[in-house]
Length: 306
Image (cartoon, rainbow, N blue to C red):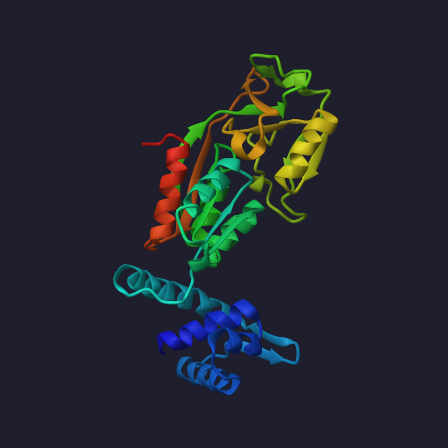
């Protein structure tokens, strides 16, 4: 088994095509096919199903790909530190729940690099996909939160996926609304005051776990609920329908604009507040890349963590 074979395998998995992978790698398709057959023979497993529509990974292939990405990723880290510059683009990806501060930190990080030499990716997505992306090394870092309600279940899921959670900041619940919302002038907002307005939450998929909700206090009984799948739609619903969402209170005016405010949520006996512990997830026993380290520094900078 060689690093070249691992690189070939990763490229084929990313393109789902021997032809496209061969073009990307500047090798002939017969050479690529021969190299993969040698690897399969050495490993004693079948890595791909081949058909007229391309190639797909077998179950053994998917499992081996995780190890291949880790090994090749460590090799790239060594080259990054000790090797001479080449034409190969370094990759870095972040998957996150819908947090504008996570995007802001990514923007600040990306500005410091020549974009023609790097392949960056920022994915605002469902909670389950944040976990899946980091577990499969599609993204190096994932941003999500834990609270008293979801902690045990989420920690079990993360452990099963061989991921570890690192705390960044703790905060209580805020009500996020349009600046011209009828409740915008309140110093704090009680749950009963929200009854006449739709609660907005991010869609997690039909079969998603109840513990994957992105909004803290998700167990409250909300009379009106509207699901959305992106931040832009969420903001439009706040304006058009006087909707609200429950958030961390950490908002980025530079990206979301100044038309939205976060008002503290006022707890009562029936509707208590809760601590939202926002952090990042990474694969266990993985050395973070220089890019990942810089991204985390930008994140801590924005969140005033020193």
